[in-house]
Image (cartoon, rainbow, N blue to C red):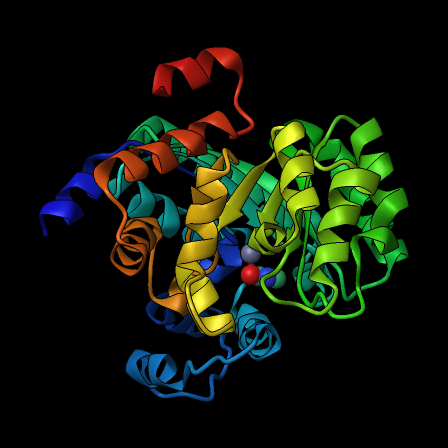
Length: 326
Ligand code: HPA
Ligand code: ZN
């Protein structure tokens, strides 16, 4: 509990957080009622008890199905505000928040509804709670490159509300190279670039290589399989790329939090960060991710301070705002 207080007190940035992954069962029921949508479970406890993921795809099935309750701009506002209140309470000062527009536009929810609700929550939370949030648009890699490109075009009127683009969803058979043209165009439009290289996925080392060398990303989400290839560690280090690791998520999707791998990368001088990914589904917000990793990998306070500082160092912040946190 001493360590818990220490972690709670550390100013933190969260850089790998899917806003749709913060949908707690209670809010899901409230939104379902508001929108007249029937759910298969009767209570929030029942929903939680049904979470039993053993792979990325088993998680994604539940994650996408739950999104049915997100319909109006107010729904997206309430979703984001609930996360921002929770994060601010854990001393998260700054958050770069993924959203998956294609998971909503493909159900008939217009892009402006999604981003309008999310942005309004960020503005209100910055004013009322003192937490600064920004958005990263994630493309769904199991959709076509053409669909991603048209989503990129749809985002351009909102360019000032979006820091960069990412790539998430089912990695199997969907390598970074599939989206080379989309990411080149995104960069030309002034977006920063990141991509998921999920843990222990088929082809992960080649996917990390493509993201770093071919796409030339500005960050990598997950990506800790790099530790198994010295040339990848070297390339990531040389480019000063941060990794956004999500220990509790790892524990659900593969068999373990990957503590030793995360520590080895930290020791190799790579700016590793700790994040929650999909906290409503994995049962741990960012502070609990630090706590669980600290217990699993026997981290000391210096290492925890290092991880928290890294989160500001690799954040996509202006120099002046970064200094204010460091
Ligand atoms: N990996 C891939 N896609 C996702 C994730 C993840 O961890 N969370 C939400 N979409
Ligand atoms: Zn993720």
